[in-house]
Image 1 (tube, helix red, strand yellow):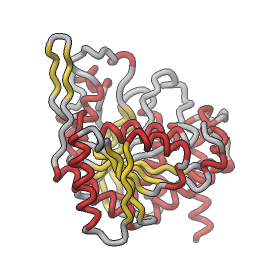
Image 2 (cartoon, helix red, strand yellow; image 1 turned 90 degrees about the horizontal axis):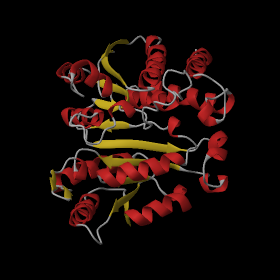
Image 3 (cartoon, one colour; image 1 turned 45 degrees about the vertical axis):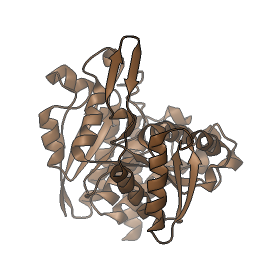
Image 4 (cartoon, one colour; image 1 turned 180 degrees about the vertical axis):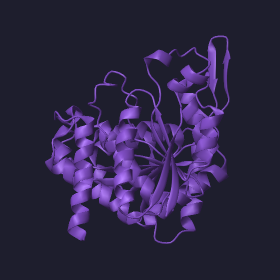
Length: 355
């Protein structure tokens, strides 16, 4: 197989964790006889500093010409003025739109060794294995915005087509898992949520093997803390998904271990850990690379159709989480490089055992 991966290190710890993910990708791909080219492009704050734009045209071209895009993180205090007309986050939102990625997949499993780091009791985390599917290119983040004197307006807008396509993606995922889909909205108050609920109900009725449950977003926020193991695939709109997935990620013990994939209609996707740029630890070599490495595993599975290689990376990470020294966000003292090296070494051991 030949493939091209665009790497967007971004800001803060982004360059450190993407370097870790690339190292793991090189290891797992080289020994499979695959030829993969990596190209690096600027996005976010660093792109503003060097080009004046958060998403330069060269970056857009590089991503559109790639089979997959691996992203670090964007933003930081240097560019955090809310009154600024050009902001790092605009680069991320623009990239999602350019790539046409409308379904953000965020899996959540709680590793036994990390359960003690979760704010929940360990017994409430047994069996937690769920995936969020967050609609990514509609809603309040992309609606019209205006300021009229002392009044600010953010439009939340959805069409049936936008809801239908992301729900179909969620159904595909649920069918390959336990067949249970939970749709989250605020249909008791919002007209967009009423459209969401009606469209979701219609789409799921046309599917086989899917059980549908509706939850209001405020109830869902509570249920994620009281019975997270009850859920399989959760689909929701952009703003609700942004909030709920960060809440859910905390259950895993650290934002540093959670990956994500943003997918559209084709195989090309955008892959990134869900944590931010963490400027307070940037350059210190202590960032947790696990979220980025697991995002690379999702890249292997969804964009390159290399399920065995993805399984190998995830198995290596599980072994490292179980037995190796971890980064300080997980209570350890290991550096970013040491954790990365441990994953690479475990991959080599798995390959040797299978030979």
